[in-house]
Image 1 (cartoon, rainbow, N blue to C red):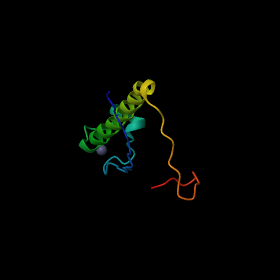
Image 2: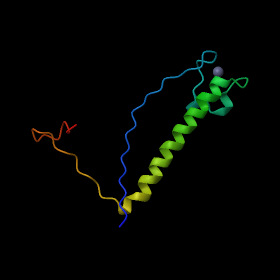
Image 3: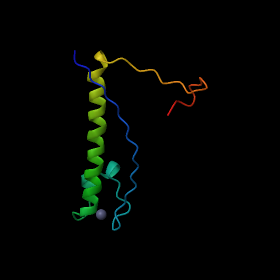
Length: 87
Ligand SMILES: [Zn+2]
């Protein structure tokens, strides 16, 4: 029997801005909004694309694993209250 346990925890916040093009937003402007081939804007665009791919891969994984997975119940805190789960 094959057993596969998967746990995902990603807590990362990135706040980045191009010094020359502070109004550039890779989500809104895309690659067409990059002015003059700015390397910083390209890096912001690549970073955003990597995030989109990661989100897509996680969603695809969860969709594929759904038929074989069993949801786990949150662990109870010592006091028995589920509002603040055990650490
Ligand atoms: Zn730039």
